[in-house]
Amino acid sequence: MRRGLYTGLIALAVCLVSCEKVIDVNVRDADRRYVIEGVVTDKPERHYVKITTTQNLSDNNNFPGVRDAAVSVTDESGTSFVFVEEEDGVYKSVHSFAGVSGSIYTLTVDINGERFTAVSTMPHKVEMDTMYITEEFLFGQVRKAANIAYRDPQGERNYYRFIQFIEGMRYNRVFVTNDEYTDGNAVTDKLRTPSDDEDHQIEAGDTVTVHALCMDKANNDYWVSFLSSGATGGGGTASPANPTTNIQGGALGYFSAHTLQVLEAVAP
Image 1 (cartoon, rainbow, N blue to C red):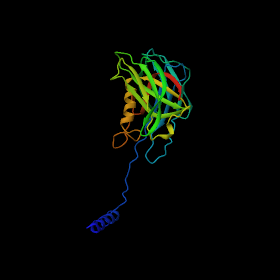
Image 2: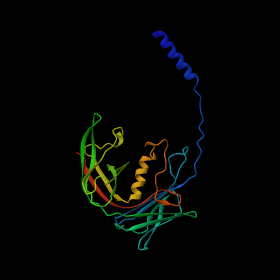
Image 3: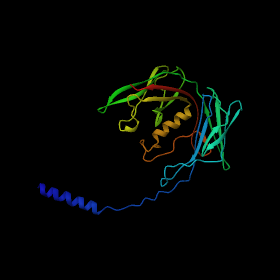
Image 4: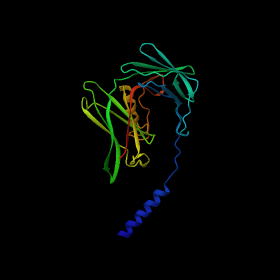
């Protein structure tokens, strides 16, 4: 009986192997689109706009910068700030200026006869109280994580994003949250790193820097959709999709007028 079962399984395996067929999938190249990343903060500095184009699946991961664009940002009073190209696809404001909480900013980008615009409102700044590093035992290993503590203002919707640097190296994991369930509360956000991401674990003695951003709803929607749509190759979708954008005219990306606070701690 057992010998007959083994023989049957072997025969089935041989049959399955012999039935294998190479299938060529014809993946059509999509039209290239512009990708715009524009940032204005409440810091007195030269702000930037990056412009690249999308790539097809068969291309490499080098996204070429777009040159010779006309780029400007205008505030609600009508004051216009011109951005000039400093390197391929990277444009910076000619003069330093600080964005103002509560003000509305409009980005305008002209490229080869096409115009793209986006509007972003810089929210009121929520000051982070402190940052510290803690340890926790996960999946049989001790992991360190940055903790950001603050008091969320009551009665207004707030959207937060955190950008983490370890020893000066930026970690590209997206940390976003909002106060839907914590309005008016004391909050501590823990920036956990996946256990299988060995290259970005915090070690004792590391200097950890976190940029704390307060952003508007449109940018929150962009980053949430960036995570959930599979734009990073993950998420629950069958195939990657484009994140929600606040840019009008057919380009991808985002324009964000946000506040910025820099925090730093050394891991024990």
